[in-house]
Length: 457
Image (cartoon, rainbow, N blue to C red; front, side, top):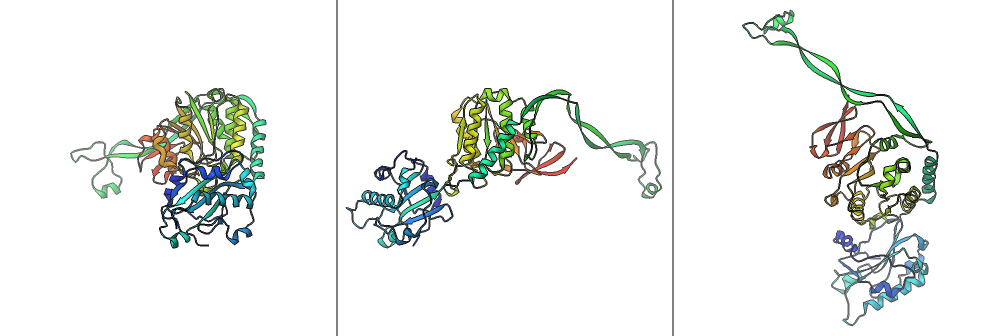
């Protein structure tokens, strides 16, 4: 099989966003061909376990012999199908739509279950670059099948069951929190009241004077250490809760969310991909027991593309956004479960900005966002940050000795804040490269790789 390598692959993904949507119900070949084809140079021929090829010769509706040796997966595992052909014609009277319908009918005979799946995305691509018969025959023709990037069902159900157990084990209570004062050790120079000689020999003899004299002797100083209050939290009653923490790394995210008085109209955006389960459980506990959160009733769970294979994800159009506009916890909770079951993110970077932009359009009167994000996952669509017009306050999970630069930039440019287990980080829009800030009992320096811990007090 001869594959023509893609020339401007990025344009393929740009064009892909225009006018394409999944057809619903029983799929008819004529309906697929009726859609306007996407015109590109060459269709990419990516390789990987989530893509398979069903090639046909140029100007033919018959599959090549190797197709009949392929073991076809269940149609329910298919995410998208691309019908690919070239624009080049040997004669002007050639009817491309009729050929495409014959190709689709032959696919239907080979794999009839595909045409019963309402969630498959069907797209037609016309390759414009070949200008000769030889060039056209060297291009790929036929079908490109993209399989779903589906997380193991058993593993996802295990994670959901863990969250169920934690949420159901919760018991509400109030406890008295004593006054807490944190101190910072400060070094400072103080005068001793004596003056030192200029002569090195006299200094070695530890000779001192009580006045500067005619020689303007320098004052003697010494370094003293003392502690200054860094933060004082008065004693108070705190509404808290006890729940089964088995399997959780910690429970501080829940306490952070419940201690903070979140004001105004806000939406909560929750990353439910990959390793976020321990944090998702605590977020759901907060939503269940926070009056103001449920009163706002605006939540988005995002999983970066549902089950889309990574090669089909495009900046700003990855998908996998699940909205819950409800004051009922059960409704929000079911939406969270659906988002988890539909995908676990696949590649590491996430579509945080796409989620923020969609929430802005859905709820234009919001004052701010609260985003629950994974510090270890870069923001794949950080280039779209200028489209976010409301403050983003980030509950950053999994923070160690470094805060990812994407989240620093997101908070800084939207006039938002970052919350870690150690502290609330403000005024990030004033931070410059090389600048240092206190976070809890540590000092961090802002570098290209993010906020990096340089030392502890």
